[in-house]
Image 1 (cartoon, rainbow, N blue to C red):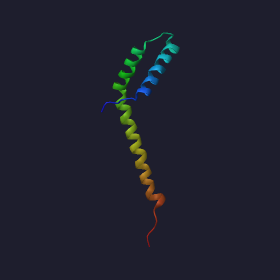
Image 2 (cartoon, one colour; image 1 turned 180 degrees about the vertical axis):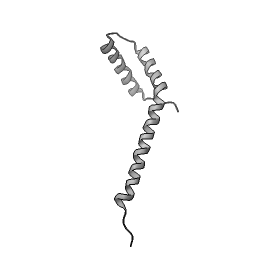
Image 3 (cartoon, helix red, strand yellow; image 1 turned 45 degrees about the vertical axis):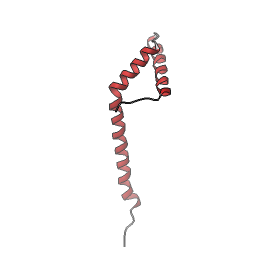
Image 4 (cartoon, helix red, strand yellow; image 1 turned 90 degrees about the vertical axis):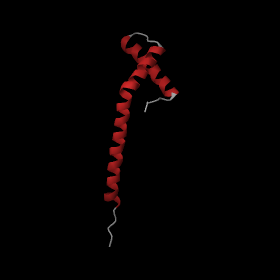
Length: 77
């Protein structure tokens, strides 16, 4: 599965990268270069971050499901 950003989100990230690069390195980078960096990072670290998010969500919901037994258990007579 390839990670795809919505156009507006991608544009925001590219603009943020351009601003960051200028403020940290006092150099301008083109929108094209910033877009290439964003695409590279999405390709290289995007899948691992996505998978970590899925694993974290799975763990969270598993813990909540376990809580159902203790929080809402009614003894039977």
